[in-house]
Length: 215
Image: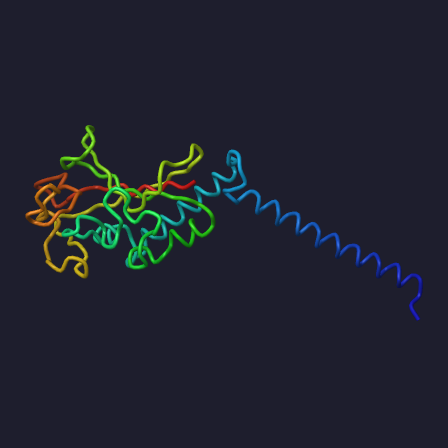
């Protein structure tokens, strides 16, 4: 037989557990609202800060990954087809398809695209070929998905290319070093590589900023 006091205690305990469940659900909903980029309106400053941190961490992780770092990604250029191997074209890179597994192991798609974010991943380099902009620098898209939103966040990493580096040999199979490629896309006599030698006479070939923009 349940005593009145025991029954009151049971009701109190059930009420406490129920309140915890409701509070947890509310907190989860609030978190989901904060981190979801498709809730409409301007993204809050806290969300932009969180997104910037996640993007920076992703870029840092890839920079330290010898199999999926940015120098390896740049080497995936196809000098014959004049685009990254398997990409759409030079201006949009891999576009909506995203980089192949061989390049970043699916990191950008899994971290950003699959969580509702859109991103551009663009290389900015010194020196230039015939299509470069007037200030003496150029850009090359790994992934371009359109103009970013006004509240987009951008993070970047800088990598150094050296004269004696080679393009991916599974893609090109020619053994040539970077300085041996042609940077003029109109003839491609020696195979085309768009990033030029910005420091002739030195072992450094070019310094490239890899810029990630997310919105």
